[in-house]
Image 1 (cartoon, rainbow, N blue to C red):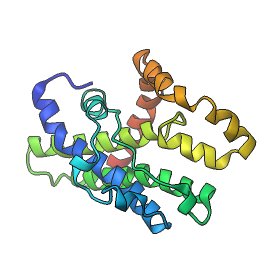
Image 2 (image 1 turned 90 degrees about the vertical axis):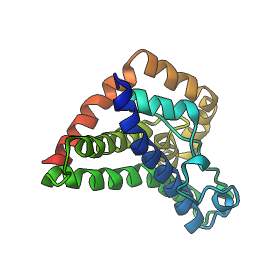
Image 3 (image 1 turned 135 degrees about the vertical axis):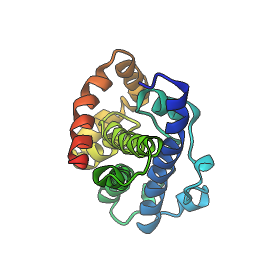
Length: 197
């Protein structure tokens, strides 16, 4: 958790980049797979104003995990809906991993110039890794649930979809009791260290 206003302000550009590119990646892959819905809804852009969810952005700033407004898609436009939904869901976390690598390069080779710039790159690395890991949790409405639905047999998906409306409540409960942080922390630390080796 961030503890000071300067930390929050320094993290804000990284949050905007992480969320905007994450949602843009979802929309772009869906569009490339034949669904015009993201384009029609104005989501094929990296403009943060098109993607930000106020609560999700504050969560990411303060707690290192959060969310943006989901990009609308219509699976009926996909040629292979089960496969294509997985690809669309993976696109956001994969984009965050790519961004994390980009932020890690200056840190890895010590070419960031000053402490403030170095902290900016580290925040970008940490936020993107945290957003990636958080979104891969298989609880609706996170990307991990879409990937899980694409892998499971249709009969199991049908059973799980009955409880989808409670996904956000379950997720918020797990965040409040610290379970999400306990799951994420070792994974995030491991990945950040790997990228900085």
